[in-house]
Image (tube, rainbow, N blue to C red; front, side, top):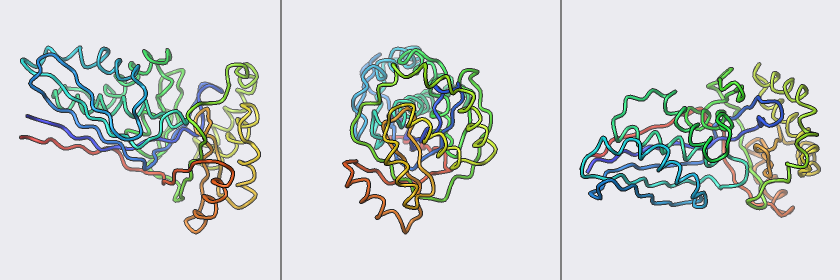
Length: 293
């Protein structure tokens, strides 16, 4: 039976929308593969989960109920299988769920031959995000950067893309994390939002092309207000990191370094008890192919 394979990647949100409503993300080369295929189980939707991403059953259920079930009537005497193989660690601020949702929608759209534009795919993924998190536009930056690569700046409250850069910093990124739970931000939210205008100014620095400067400024301020590991973040900068930021709302630290410095900073972060993931920003978008049996 027919199948569609979609190959994509994750995103690194380096400015989170909870501070001012504005957000920024860049594509990172952490692989994600989704294969959508028909089965002979009429009306059924089956998921096969591989790799790192295996926890968010709420999102899986929403992909099924909020999207796939709407279009099952287009096929007769068949069902759909989605095989998801994501290497994006969940729960560390990299918006793994946003990437999984948009690539699941994209693969199923191609399989069912729906006349969806790229914006339609993004809209459907945002609907899934809203059903799971309660916020329609919360993942706009992550979905866009994961789908198209490059660096994107968004007004998440307004649901619009402000600027998109196809070029990315020519550096390595070390993502350092300790667990799969974020910081306790609820008790600090009011305090963080008091600085919304300052975060917006940082956002403006980035969307004028100062991506790494904005990432670092945001990382320093947010790590202080969010009670994250400010000391380690600043130490990496004093030791020669090109830039350092927080992934989304944490808890991960993301360090931009030159190739010759990767091993040194990787060892430094591991000595502090972090797990690490080494990747690079990417300007590539997705690719797909149709497989006919």
